[in-house]
Image (cartoon, rainbow over all chains, first blue to last red; front, side):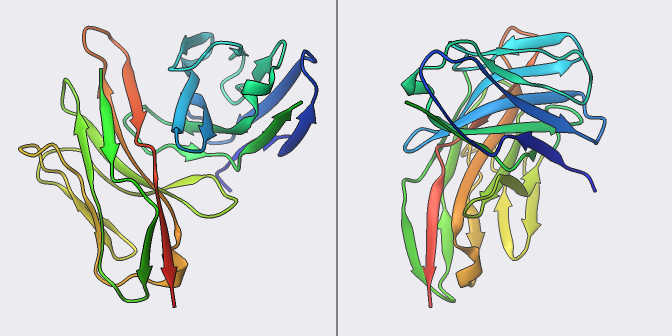
Length: 112
Length: 116
């Protein structure tokens, strides 16, 4: 089954404790991206990757890092999480940017 | 830069009512346009898309027509059901002005609630 998986689905952590949210897709897609969804602000892109070893900033990259060492994986790293990063995070992939985006189920992160 | 503006919600309709969710955009090139739907507790999934002017996307009774003259991509459905209750996002994909990469831009979402 074609899908995008994210782990963990729920995470509660404390300020400053490094964390990684994993994202994996099994569709051999070139394009992957991370979004955060906040009430009243909709969906905002954090980082995206056009292919292996090619990443670029989206609209709200501050406080986040990503890497794309393999085509299928695109982890999101928060080196020093802060409460303003409490949000719902989605990973997505597509064959090309102009094509349909496939979204993961979301990771709800709470930073206290 | 590119932008997408969609009507503020929430929208509450009775079952079998007609639905319109307005979406307008600004883009420098010739964008592809999308409507995504997010059901409670789930990720977004593509509802329909249109890739050029005058194209009509349709799926599950929903329709939207790519209107370049009015830069709009309004979502419509003739008779909504309770199961259509969700958040709807309008989005565009376009080549960023002066750059080689594409930009994907989402609207803020419109929450629809359909009551029996």
